[in-house]
Length: 235
Image (cartoon, rainbow, N blue to C red; front, side, top):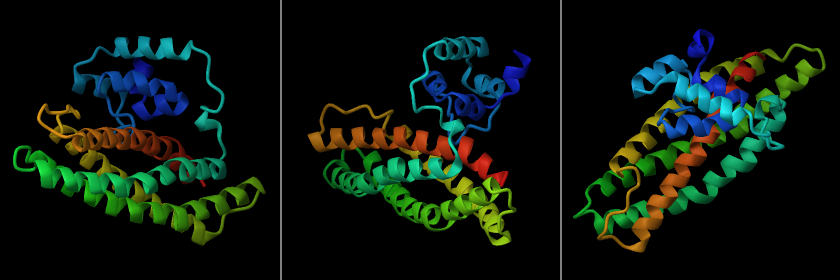
């Protein structure tokens, strides 16, 4: 137990993504809060660490699905996966969710004032994420790919690529924390996405889409914070 207690949540999930479900069941953040040691996370949530560890052990005893060993993927491949899976999802869904949150704020804001704040928060998230994705796709990921290719060839990555990676890591980690805090606030305002009895179908769909956004964000940020960023830092 002592070694496991000092291991961070992110390290557990980086080794085996299936363990994320164990942490989620107990309300433990494995993406933006992934740097917290298990013992500390359990104290904060009032959970017995042994309960978490037994759940992790049960998950690890199940057969591993092919294609889920993200930690074993090379950085260029993982970068392309993040772009083609998570960036594409965000670009396709963010405008729709923004429009839905605005609509329910207009229609239901008088009786459910929380949706007005939710609309404002999500609009900022969508704007910030647009710039965040561009930075990754146009600056950070290309620098990491060049550096990884150089390392694989036994060469030192170019100084400008190493400097770009260092600067981007600081900025991107900070932005992940900000969007994580914002989506946690939305979940709190939305009462864990519980649907009030006096609302329309658009309200229900909006909360479903917000929940989908949060679920996608958790995996997206986990892949970067707990796997991609540490490997990129080693370049």
